[in-house]
Length: 388
Length: 100
Image (cartoon, rainbow over all chains, first blue to last red; front, side, top):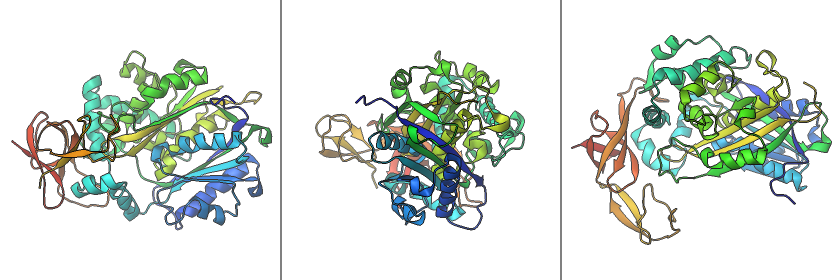
């Protein structure tokens, strides 16, 4: 069989449990279970139809995917834990597609999410991995803001950008968030507000850093002939690459740069054909880096790219992105994927992109030492025959 | 305490933090190498940190060492990009950069 085929499999739901800055009482498992239930409701499948479960979460411990499966009443034939942070959703999707195509499972639910109390978040950032525990936590950096502050300085110097340029992306995303009833931050943000916000780590200020929230997302990946709903999404291409430079570079390019050509070749379309892009926006600099790596700034002109984003000629992170909708831990990697699915389903309400047919979604994350070591991307298409 | 990097005994690639196998040649034997001197490529002042209230600011730097590896270090004092520094590990296990 053709190893690069994405035939006979479709994405049949994309849901979000509303993100909250201050979580309601409960557990991470509660949020994941809500996401699971919402995904079933949207897809039309019953729990007994689900024979695969994939889970990404930082705070589900000591439980794992199989424990969640038990609590959900499932008897999965395929079960997977994932720990790729902002790259986890597309990583899970890569495996789920192949499991369905090869008959290891027929209907897989992928869930991701976290519930954070302040102490949970501090524990996570101090113990993110051994490198962090050994070499960054003693410095009391309190998370990756300082690392991405310095990365932003390098990026600004290389591309001749000013703070206003990064701010333009944040302001544009906030304007999208105003149209998303689920976004945590929806109030209008002006460039002056952005520039006047309190400093976090020079040059980053408050609106450059994702707000930590609690929440969850889920999608359903299944054999396309089993579809129960009217509105499905198919995958045209998916590529992952991790540790492309072994943390020996400057972090200004993600591994998307190395997989972009094969991604677009596999998809049979190019950046110019894309109706909506969701890129992992832990910081505005990384959103710009991913878009550039994917080929959205072919001449290297990031200001021209920003102009297309702010004018909405290129709709980017139409949920408001994590910068406005919030970053719910491991759900961050699925947030943009769900937004793209919702847009392709024609279900995005006030922020719906008219006639959206093709989307690209990228994941990025897992800072080993100085920047993220994981990146991946998927090109999605509204399934043929669907009416808008 | 001296900060130690690891040089591949086969191809000479120097890495920090330590790895099991060399990403360049696959070699698994390493020689210890002191990382003593470097240059600040960027620095920042962290003014707000998760879970900490009203603490002293942290001056953090990216230091390109003379031996190649790039490390994240605490700056003893604010220093401009391009400042030469001497690196050491202090009693709190912090990689620290002292401007020269």
